[in-house]
Length: 601
Ligand code: GTP
Ligand code: SPV
Ligand code: MN
Image (cartoon, rainbow, N blue to C red; front, side, top):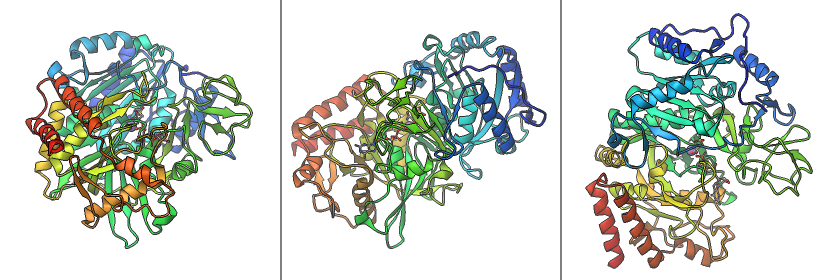
């Protein structure tokens, strides 16, 4: 299957919707002069355009059509095997000074980087079509909503952006013709999909992104991690709001009361699953709805925090998704979806490890090779993904289009930790909660290139996504807290604690409702908790474990605080802060000292 495809030639009326904003026209002209494409295709997001692009990408073997009966209007794409995840080593924040990018980011000097990238882009689109994709991030009537343009030579990127963002005319209308309007300039070229020429570069001060050499989602759907988080977090600090790697969900209790919760878990640590949770039978009358599964933009209004989901679709982890683990995701991806790097069955259905039912006797694996259950290789890549419109989600929250956003009652942090971290506990106050976020750690996953399963600090799940100095980011969190008269309560969770046998102690998925209910009850002021050195910890009787088949010993282990492990953990907190130099706010240093002191009490 191909990643790089030759130019497409559209009939009149398709691909010719030029914006009338002169700044955009000038920029497209400049990029065209540099990259020298065969032609320019101006996207408008229409159904007719979509049909044309699908037909072309089928002809060019960029996607394969799936079984129309089993997965209507859905397609499979295979990326280059050298290009299956985000590349953090080749991701750069190109602020004028290194200090602005801070100790956690790769930095490179803007002028030098532009010149290097322009060198790579010179003539890079020869023989290809240059697509211009206008899009907005955020509900159409939100004050937080941003306009972006992505130039790309990948038809797969165009098809994906159409699902992931509100794409086309809506963005041209929002932008208008003011040449000084704020909008993001994104340039993407596959080049020759060579890891040696792969760079994802951000220029926050110019609101610009250049990504070359990759065709994988997180590196090339520039709306998502690049704009909504890296550039977004930079703009958010300047403009007084927050851009976070968080899901947003609604919780309605049987008496009709509704709360909204946001949660920051690192990549492939359970955001999509938590955002689509279906409560177990024991919780009849409770209903969870999804506002977003990956990114939250939040602002302070009347002393409360309000959140919108800037995206329009889900780019989710496929392996492990089943009717057992996540029925709402299964229903969402049963149609209108673009799959990447999953296996293809002999009847043109898709398959992956962890899907319901037995494996197929034969399939084509994610690399395009024959596969049988006896094969040593996985059929689907561990970071294979679905791209699907959020409107397919049966549990989509009714407020998802609301520009004002939803009021957040609780913020949950959580990582993937085999030990040390209890199932759930609550911070003592906002500043303590910021400390929980700042010191959180998680085992690395297949979502990023590199080793899997290594514990690393990933503050607020933003380590790969904070577009400026992490010390200033922590201070921004503390400052936001000062503006909140009715702040969300802050919690920490860990679905991934393991017992002596190396198995997960907690059943997870739908059963996470039990933890969520305690969170909501704490917000309502009617759940018990014990004061511990870590903060408020539920006693075994504070969690509703009714009808759950779980050993009492497991619960004790899940909620236990091992003092020896915590002495080590606090040393790691200090090491982490020390490794960042002197950028850590005093308040967070103080939090660490009081945490250590509480253990001595
Ligand atoms: P990104 O899209 O990379 O940001 O990931 P995400 O945070 O949305 O993670 P996702 O919900 O896709 O889950 C990632 C992996 O964790 C999948 O393999 C899930 O099956 C698994 N997972 C999710 N929730 C749980 C849970 O509660 N318990 C356990 N054991 N695994 C879970
Ligand atoms: C993540 O890695 O956190 C994702 C997938 O959500 S990607 O868009 O590739 O970043
Ligand atoms: Mn993510």
